[in-house]
Length: 337
Image (cartoon, rainbow, N blue to C red; front, top):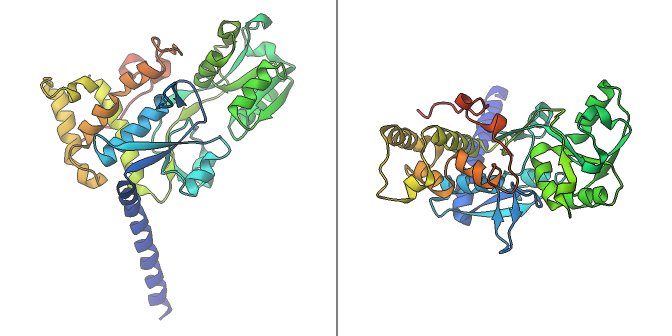
């Protein structure tokens, strides 16, 4: 008898988990928009323009997932969250997905009941400081007061690196990015430490950006990517394969303009990518038009990078590790078949 009771409880739990997984996409469709947790303002990644419209690298990836689920006109709502708020907000279902710059670590993966479906940006922790200090290496920072953002991996990385190198330091922690940068400008700390990509945006927020430099050195690996809840297995797949599609589209040179222009001719490779991706749409709970909807909404990875972070953007960050694998970068997507 006990065996049958246990079996019954197992199948009930499994049924509830399956229903929860299926309901996430249904809830998003019923609501009419995807709720994305983004930063409270990080130039190049997620910030508001003069028209109060959200834009940036992380924002575009949110819009890509919204297009996959809701169609070419799929809407996204952006919820600004601090580093300390983000994981609780996701677990409490205030948002469906985090698309704010978040590092994938073993501890976070195993302890937070959250999943990182993909990496969208390969970063590393760096340092910004006044050019007047005439410092060009981390080795010269012994004794520095370092401003960091609470709830990030910055403190752990600095402690590990500075103690290993036998460098003295003092941390000055802030709960928001605005507070951290204000303290830096007021001279409460000598340098700011965060992901190098973020520091390029922070530098632009200074009153005199030319008076501040971002050191070329990094002290950690920071693979950044979207985050979803562990139980949302279908949404995990949608996010993972949306990212893979965006990367593969760059390999195939499938640009946004080729999708939005109905008369634009597609190469055999581009047609094959769209056809193979569409063929597995049912496994993702999406329509067959999802590949066209995604690329039509945001373009491929290179287009997203260039307009938000690339050399012609205000941040001017070279592709580096975020180039495609055959261009010396780390971007490599599994085959879309």
